[in-house]
Image (cartoon, rainbow, N blue to C red; front, top):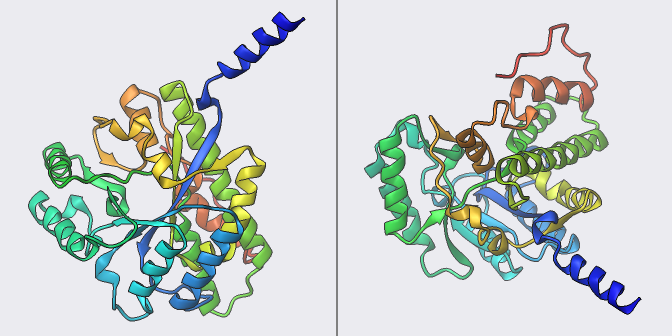
Length: 317
């Protein structure tokens, strides 16, 4: 009997760690303009408290340095310092938040440098750069490769994303509805926000397993929005209920996929999508609600109680 127990213990210890679903939370566009529910200063404080109460030890906040001092962003430098004091980390999200597809590689790298001047030496800084709009050059491979080389020369790595649910769009729809004086079902809004992100995590994890044969440590894209401040605690609880463990951004970016540089016809979107595309997996390689033709009517029906439009569902390529 003892030998049987020993064999079973060895088998259990030999199970791959990759079977565990792990995900880090990251927030873009810091400091961000306010939404429809609170000002920027109140939002930053609420977000810090919500992450602490949810037991999120470390999230990453990607800073768009040109937003500092812009009207509506409050005391952005103080927000950033507050995030770091709470145990979170910061990284570069450019100065002017422009699309690489619309400018030269040299101008793009200069914009990164401009942001890095402000960031350099600040507590909590990590050597990650996240492409605005997740645009890595589109179909221009020469530009893509020039920026990849430029990042490496600067000691920066790609602050990639593996899972996202267009949270910026849900927040924009809610803000517009509030400004228009429409009745918002806040419980339905919370449920839609949480459900979309949990579904996205599950979708992209399944895609990653098909592509890589394992579940990598995922990186979820969120934004510094009012809805994040309101509902991130609910999101964390829902993820854990589905078997996810929330890990640090440091843990996520230590995953082996961080070293991969997929070669696809167009460079834009999540790393999960790019790796699946490179391997030849068919579309769709993205979560359905990232198609706003699907997301927007769903918001109007569930959150605003409006009758669904009498049109057929759009074809997803």
